[in-house]
Image (cartoon, rainbow, N blue to C red; front, side, top):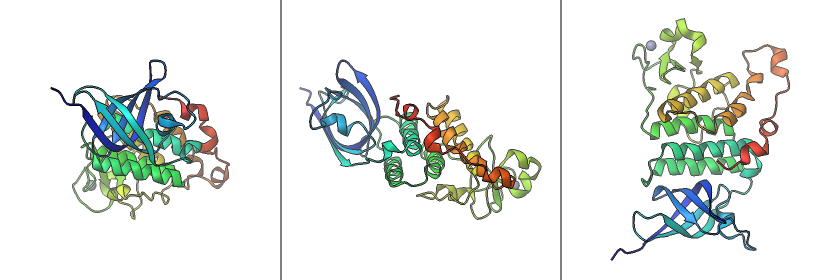
Length: 283
Ligand SMILES: [Zn+2]
């Protein structure tokens, strides 16, 4: 006789797909069980207490109970309670765009059914920081690089891709994402992403990230390096690319490399350039 399987874990909702009249198929990223899917029966029904609908609707960490007839059958969600609420995040469009990026990165790069403790703690802390109002662009850029490293697509950041030296790593190659030293980079200077001497590539992985010192132009370059590597290894663009581009580009107007008039020009606020409709749509 096959015994029913009960899973108790905490997790994040990665994706909700409408199923039949009032149910959902939910993709979850669980702390101890990794990426898994389940059916949440009646989860789209409006109830007085909110029930599963409330627990599954945002970016909260949720205490979950799942049951299935056998280890290979699709599980049914039988319990969902908010464990770590993140109530403010959905009202901050820039933070929400980055939270959606993390959801998409997990769905694309975490292997199903395999616990990913580092990716779990990275994503949970990123959501906490976004809830608290931390700089979304820093979290976006560093989060993309962390995902690449944790998915096994390590970039060569310890030494120069041209000559192998470990000092003076002041560029990243947009083509490969690898580090390039000042001497090797000189002839290609206008094509490389410049890093300040105080921030060699390995420091881009500091967590929580502190990229506030970098110019908007460098931030844009770093975002693109991460995005292009993710597209390369994921074999296609990500659905959240356009939103993240808008968010990162919104800082370009204040680039210190540009003239004073350009620097003082009012910049569009990412909160107003990203419309609620764009960031709220259910993928
Ligand atoms: Zn070199």
